[in-house]
Every structure is written in structure tokens, then in C-alpha cells.
Length: 288
Image 1 (spheres, rainbow, N blue to C red):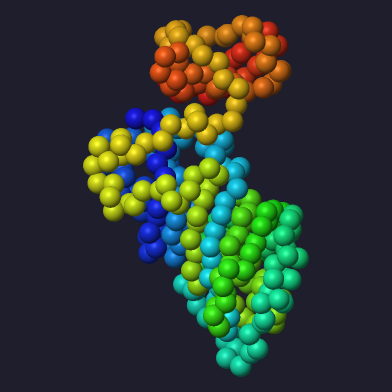
Image 2: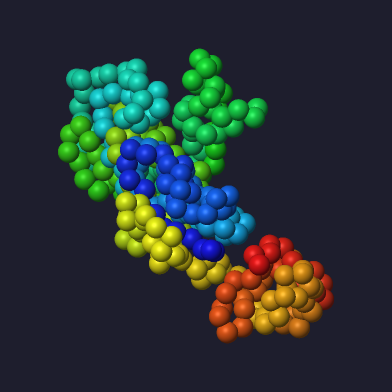
């Protein structure tokens, strides 16, 4: 079995809980993984890789991600979201007007330096930040460069605002929630989050986890990853030779160091990713 699943992760479970359920359905020791962790309080698109598709993770990690988030003013938490422990509360505050919010959101559009949450999977000297936080140590995280392609105010209903964000990999919506509050001098946190897309994979096309209960359910919803890998392609018929790592003469004159997806003639099945080295294409990722 080879391909991707676009799962709509429900709130209240971890991303690995999704994998745990699917593992119970799949054969023992079957390889499976996911792209882009969603916190338990969040729902939305979780891209699952099946079998040798896990070798292709890098091709799907760089795409844009889209979210709809609800930010609540009046208190902040150690995790920067609703699940954390409150440490600052402010009941008497002036709710910012729409124009002021939109002006601030515009100011953080583009490439920005963002400080990740202390409770996050960022590594510091080999240890996760959340592990240091839980052991009573203060993680010393550094700002990271991320890109906000767009960020819009969708709605306001005091003490909440709803925003829509399109951003790069590594962006924390929890940090955006913190920064908005700090700008207006009001404690705030992320109180709800939905990931609406990962690259080309949309929530409208995702499958509800509760409806994936058998091998047939998985097979019926597998997505061919080759359609979403933006590389030049070469069709090849001798799968046995290819599986042995044969070099292919570069008759098509692909550029040096260019990666090529090798598809099976007739079926269009993705067989391998090759890389151009001079006069030959050489194996980079074998999928058969």
C-alpha cells in the first residue's frame, strides 16, 4: 500500500492518536507517518503517509499552510492556548477596534521573526522545549524566521477575534495570538484552531477519522502522491531493472542535479525519484 491520506483530525486527540488508530487497521510493522503536528486542541488537515510514501516527506513539508484561529483576550497561559495554565488575567480592558486590529495584522504580513512558544517541539541542545518546561526549566528559545503570506480579520465578538492565516512551515498560530495581545497590552491566547489546508490538500477534501475503520476504507481514500510532486517526469517500463538501481542515460538533457520522478509506463505509478549527474540519471529515492 502506497500513498497519502488527507485526514480531518478531530479536536481532543493528538496527531499520533490518528496514527495509533490507523496502525490497528494496517498490517503489523507497516510504515506510517504524518506531516505537520496538530496540537490536541486543534482540528483539521493532517496528511498521513503510507508505506514508502514516508520517503517523500520533504516534498510535502515546504508547502503553505492555512488556518482559522480564534483568539481570546483577557487572559494568557503558559502554553499560549486555552489548554494551558493561566498566569495573567485582565478583566477590565478596552477591546481593540477592527481598524486597529487590521492595521496590526498588516504589519506582520511577510517575512517576520517569530518567537516560538515555550511549550513546543523546538529542540534546545537535543531536548524538546516542552520537556524543559515540564521539568521546571525556562527554555531559551530564539526567534525564527517565518513567512505570513496573508492574515485577515474574519470576525470579532468580544472577547474573541477570528483570524485567517496563510503561512509557511514552522509558523506558530499560538505565537501570533500572544503577539496580538501584547501589541494591545491585553493578555490573550489561542482558544480554537482549524487547519484548513496543507499545500494542495484541503479540509473540504479530507476524510473524517471516524469513517476510517477498515483496510478497504484506507484503500478507497488513498491519494496518489505523484500528482502533487512538482518535478519533471520520465516514463520507464522495466521495473525490475529499476528496482536494482539502474542508471538511466540522460537522453532528455535534464539539468545537472535536477530531480526527476520516474513513472511506470501504462499505469503512471510512481517508481522512484532520480537525480541528474552529468550524462546519467541516478537513484535518489527508490519506491519499489
